[in-house]
Length: 271
Image 1 (spheres, helix red, strand yellow):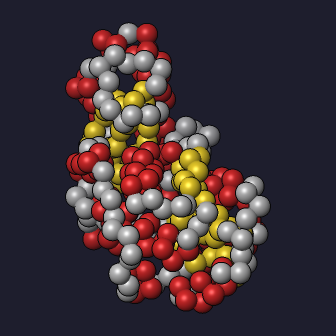
Image 2 (tube, one colour):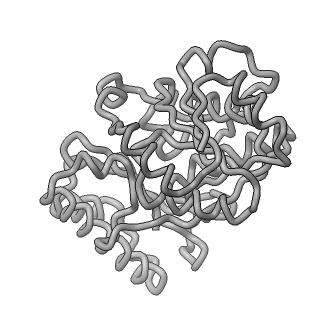
Image 3 (tube, one colour):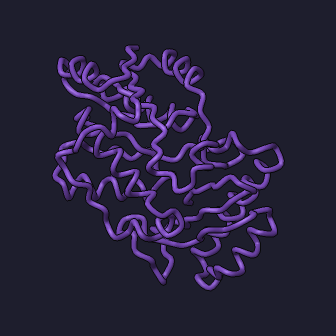
């Protein structure tokens, strides 16, 4: 595994390759990231993983500062996975140039997380656009836990006619049902139990809703989530996973999208 800290050295190295499979991360690696890396390695192309905690996608300085970081542990793990390249850029390396492509921000960026995290998706798409320009990957591997982010990155790539292809990968869950997330490390045992109970409650609710639309009563569901231990609920909504439109008649193609807090930790998921 070769480690690069500046884009010019990295670009010289990857120019020799036949294509790159790219797994962007903010570090704090977990089973979800490992799954993406394993999928990437199946392409038989060289796998490049990035670790960069992007300050522009955080709407609170406190959230940026408390984001879990453990680069030494991450490097150790990536060596075991035998990836080809690790890119750990500085802020200047990523933001010290003007990209050729302008970011396309679909109007769906104003919904769900976009409604509660001002500037978040602008920050995500800005950094992804820059990584694409530096690396020119053939494939980019992204998980479905951040479904809205995945959708918006795909829209940007389509609209800007970028050749990189997004590979959607399933959400990896802990044994207790919680979606793998770097933020889970901020939860204590009791809080993990709360998050697990919320997941199973919503999963069972979705099954019931499929049989009876009338059970989708948002205020009642939010009250139940608070009773289970959610400190605050940003949203609970249903969308068709193909068109990303809200649907009145809940059929098999909908997902429940939700974001909530347990104390100061914000968790998002979709089922």
